[in-house]
Image 1 (cartoon, each protein chain N blue to C red):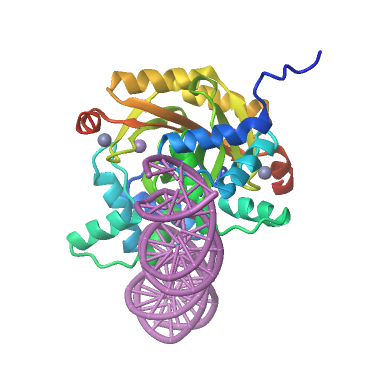
Image 2: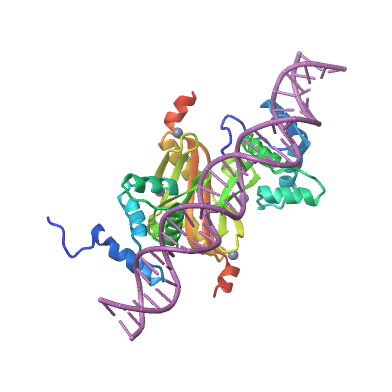
Length: 157
Length: 157
DNA sequence: AAGGCTATTGAAAATCATTTTCGCTATTGA
DNA sequence: TCAATAGCGAAAATGATTTTCAATAGCCTT
Ligand SMILES: [Mn+2]
Ligand SMILES: [Mn+2]
Ligand SMILES: [Zn+2]
Ligand SMILES: [Zn+2]
């Protein structure tokens, strides 16, 4: 079967980003597009911080300042395109945002920093019921499990 | 920073702090005792950061340096006396640690910073089962729900 | 297509929580 | 008691993030 040329694909994403930005009074820029592209081409389950974004863009020959990266990340979080994660240790990580009921959660090795993802509908349910029962309007939930991964366990004997 | 998994979570009587510290080669000091006292006399559900600890000790006439506060917090987390929380916004909060199956979780207003606690055994269950199924040795879980509290909702219209 | 308004950019300086350094002091164990 | 050294305070250093500011570039209206 051939792809339906009428269906949207990643090549049309630039249009979408511009639309989403302009709707809220932000401007479309090539820097913001390049940063979003990084997330879209990153492996599933991969989280990026400002430093890694800067390095990856450098690697592909794009020069960009840290202030621009941080500003772009904030804007895209505000627009709901990205999700900010407090995985651990003094820096923030980002990933593409997903619909609330499909949110996944994280298992972090505190020794090597390895992060694994998992889905569990229980989380969203508990999050919703707790917030409604207290009159909070829910924005999002983060469930983070800290432990030591198998390979670090064997290293630490 | 995560607690050392080999160390049991001990209940804290004032005279026990010395025992717990010395067992691991740390020394008992009046500064560490005063900091732990703050947590033990704080209202349930109250979380403290380094700045607040410093201010509260100043208020009660105790002079202490920030380096000492940070060092004490790290030691007490390592000993399993305190739990470190990543509630939000660039600073770490601490509270008295509790046994794993009694852990509680947090509902944070992203507008005013108000934090509410709740217990739900589901969290610990999911945390345990996810970590065992991947061979991780579990240290702890944090479930943080972000939203807007009732009073901030009315302020924001 | 041109022009004005102003959001955005890059570079550098500023912030701010936390960490480190270092000379001195206090705790521990013998 | 006393030597060894963990811990202390003050000040400097760190490191991620934010702000400042002059120059540039999107977006909108002619
Ligand atoms: Mn993820
Ligand atoms: Mn709490
Ligand atoms: Zn590991
Ligand atoms: Zn609020």
